Image 1 (spheres, rainbow, N blue to C red):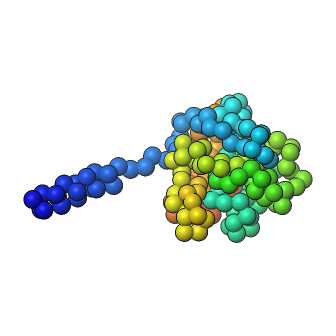
Image 2 (cartoon, one colour; image 1 turned 90 degrees about the horizontal axis):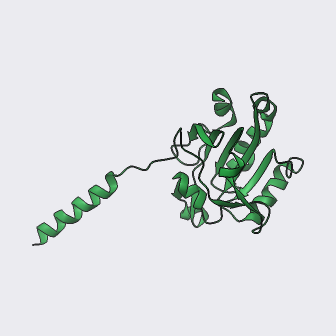
Length: 184
């Protein structure tokens, strides 16, 4: 009996672990999830915001984290003019943080761009938007909860045209501004 129970347990574990995650993919529509900008009372829906035109959505593991603040997000601002020349007028930075933290982070990095509607720092406090994209990972060891993988999405008229998702969750290679700009 013990052997049968062990085999049954192994089979159920194997079946479960064999199911692959499906990250956001080319052709997917941007999910309709509530994000927040500046305060918990200021709802933003990226499905609506990206419904027309060309946009870039950038996901980060956490506001104020070293790689996010020192290279990932600043890389986009250094290339902002080049993205604009290719027709990208809206940039959305999404972090699994609260709205006050993302607002303070945006102001600390680029106060002159906050509030321009060209660059918007958005909070995904419960990770619902990130979960809908299937880009959450267990970051409890470092951040205390699940966080978003580092990624960038090229979006046109509400549809994902290109994905740049870091395979190790946090590096700044695949999703760097330089990598995205080459494909934009």
